[in-house]
Structure formats: C-alpha cells, structure tokens
Image (cartoon, rainbow, N blue to C red; front, side):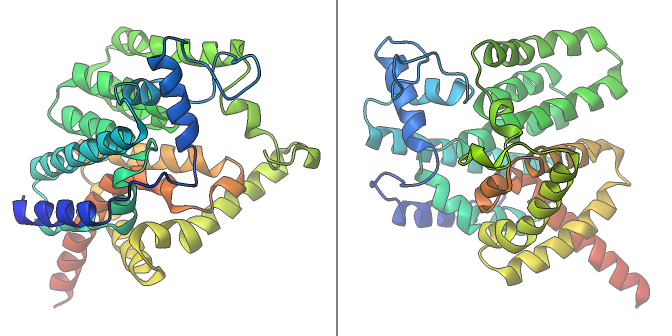
Length: 322
C-alpha cells in the first residue's frame, strides 16, 4: 500500500487531536471502569451506589485503558491503537490485492479520523476485528479465533464476527470440537452477565431504555424497530460515516456491486456472513441508539473491500457493454 497515503491520514489525525474529553457516548464509564481495575477494586461500576460488579460492557477495553495513568494518556493510547489499525488494515488490503485507493477511502473516512483519539471502543474493536480477518484469510485459524474472542470482549457486537468465522471454519474443516472449545469464554461472559443482571439483554426489550414507562416491545414492534434502524442507516448512519449523503449514496451503490462480485468468491464468504450478522445484530436494538454513524464504523474495512470490488465489478460490466 502507498505509505504516503497512510502518512497523510496520520498527520490529519494529529492535527484534529483534541485533549478535551468527549462529551458523548460512554467514554467516562469506560474510564471509571479502568480506574477501578487500576486501583485494585476489580471490575466494578464505581459510579453506582455500593459499587456493584459491572456486567454491561465487556471487560477487555477497560482492562486495556487501565495501563493509562490519566485521561490524556488514555486518549494517546487510543491514538496509538488507531495507528496500529491503519497498519493492520493496509496488510489486510494488501493480502486481498486491493488497489491503493482502498486504503485512501479507509484512512480518510471522516468519522474514523474523529474517533482516532476518543476514549471509546470503536478503535480497539476495529483493530481486533481487522486482525481476525487478516489471520483468517492467511489460514492462521487459531490466531483468528483468539482475535475474534478478544473482539467480543471489547464489544458485544463482535459476536457476529465470531459466528462468521465459526461457520466458515466448520464448512472448511468440520472440526466442531475446536469451535465448541473456542465458544467457552464467550458463553462464560454471557453467563456472568446473566447472573449479575447486566448485559444488553436487560435493555433490549424496552421500547425506550431511557423511558421504561413506555413498556416493552412485542414481535410487531421489533419488526418496526428493524425497519426504522434500516431507514436510519441510510439517512443518518452512513452519511455520518462517509461525510455526507452524496458520498454515502455513491458508496452504497458500489457496496451493492461489491456484494454481487464477492458472492461468486467462496474464499470471501466470511465478509458477507459478518456483514449480515453485524447489521442484523444492531438493527434489533432500540432505535434511539441507532441515530449515529459510529455503529457502522466497525464495518469500515468490510465496506472498503466491497467498494473496491464494486468498482472492479462496475468496470467489468461497462467493458462488456462496450
């Protein structure tokens, strides 16, 4: 990959680096969890009465943040992980023999640069999910499963990636015992959240998690929620991710063409399974959370691969007609 393109993105990310704490998202909760770990209190919600054991966010991100002595160092740590993500993504794109402009699209995506220094789980998840795909495509399945487990321990949505590599690995190797063994830490975490009354399942069924008086959803409300989140993806999520509605519209067309091309390549089926699983997993959650582009940031490497393949597919179709 063109190193000058990556260097340009790094310089731009440095220029927009802001030492002020981000006012949105869950960054302060992540930071307080990391302080509890660092101070020897364990994995506890120290902002709540009686500081109960925490069971909402998976523990790996706060554990990583615990090495930072203060908030500024935590932001610098995220920036370092951003740099590692650029390197890992460039290796992934190189291995798939994608053109140089693919890393250009990835590295200069507006929302990625904005999140390059925020103390949120997007960047660590991007790094680990990219390493999962990189190892899987290189047939280093043990490392791929390890990175996928770590992805789940960063964000619950990582389960979609873990399911994707489990399915493809079983189709290729039929070694179900290894897959079952790899599922043990994932199941253990979900049992832990169930015991301690946390996890996203606790808020999933509420119409509005911030106003429980509205009650819980039924099957019809769930279908409406999926439809609303699908709509928000095209009108809010992807435009925020790619910068504006125009780029989002162009890229969605190319992504569709890329899916048409990849579905003929069995070696890349994992991308389609991961994409479908991830989108479904976030579309079923409360719509009030989905009016934000950050939920689609973890899919950026997959989007970029599909965009590059979409351009190849478009060129091929154009040449056939000519």
